Picture 1 (cartoon, rainbow, N blue to C red):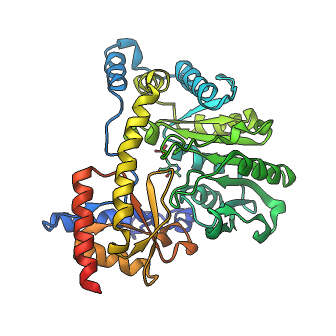
Picture 2 (tube, protein in one colour):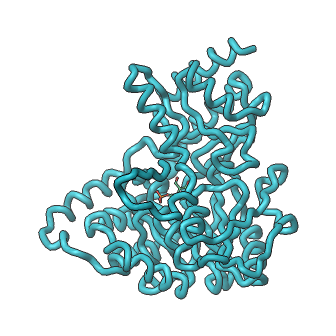
Length: 397
Ligand SMILES: Cc1ncc(COP(=O)(O)O)c(C=O)c1O
C-alpha cells in the first residue's frame, strides 16, 4: 500500500510518503489478481502458521465469550490473568522473574508494540539501530516518528551476528537497538553469550535493547532459543517482545506482550493508552490458557511437522536453483539463488511455476540474491509447490 492523493481531499501527512509500500501487500495484490484470473498460486512466501491452535485454547475462548461480563472495556495495562500467564511462562521457560503488574504489557500482536515503541522513544533527529537485513516493522515506527535509521551490518559468514565494529553513523542520537533471533528472514539463531555482548554494547552507548523474539518456540533438532532477559541484570536496558502468533499458531488472534524494563513499558503504555483500549477479554483468557496449559509435547509435535517440511525442502534445494544452511529455528529458509538475481527468481517462479516466494531485497539491500521460503504451508501443497518449482527450474537449464 502507498499513500494516495486526490484533488478533492486535503493533502495527506508527509509521514505517509516516508513509508515504503508494504512488500506483502504488493505481492498479495498481484496474487489476488492471478487467482481471480483462475491461476492456482501456491504461497510459500508468507510466514503464517497453517495449523490450528491447541484445542483447549479454542475451548477457553468459547467459554469466555459466553460470559456476559466479558464484553466491556478492560484496563489499559491489559488483563491481569494474561500478564500473570506471561510472567509464568518467562519463569518456567527461561528462569526469568518479571513482575506481571509492571514488567509485562500485553500487545495487540507484537507488531503493534514494535512500531509503538519507536513512537515512545524517537523524535525527529533521533536514530534507531536496525540490522541491515530485518523485519520491516523495526524501521516503520522510526520513519513515522521522523527519526533516522542506522544500519547494523550482519555477518552472513558468521551466522548473521552483528558487526558492531562496522557500524557507521552518529550513535550519540541513537535510542534503540533492534535484534531478532531466531531470525526472520535469515533463520539465524543465537546462544546466550551473543545477547551478553549486545547488552554490553547497549549499556556502553546508552541504548534501549529491543529483542524481538516471536520464534523462540519454533525450533528444531533439539535447539532451545534463549531470551535476552536471561542475561543477568539485563532488565536495566532491555525489553523483549514475545508473541503467541507462532508459538501457539495464533497469528490471527493478535496477541503478544512486551516484557522487561519497567520504564520502557510505562512509556510504551503512554502511547498505547492514547491509541487503543486493550484487547478483548476472551482473547486474553484464551491466551492465558495457551501459556498456562499447553504441554511441551504439543509444541514438540508441531515443531516435528515443521522440521519434516524443512528436511523436505532441504533435500530438493539444488534442483530448484537454491542453496541454504539448514535452519534450526524460525519458520523460514533463507536461500541463495543460483545466478544471484532474487527478483528474477521470484518473478519467474510466480509466472512459470505459480509458486510465490519472497525476494530477499524486501528485507534490506544485503538480501539481494536471496529468497525466503516459509514452512507454514500444508504438506500436500508444499509437495505440489516443490514439484512445480523442480519442473520449472529443470527447463531453465
Ligand atoms: C520477526 C518478527 N517480529 C514480529 C512479528 C509480528 O508478529 P505478531 O504481530 O503476529 O506478534 C513477525 C511476524 O511475522 C516477525 O516475523
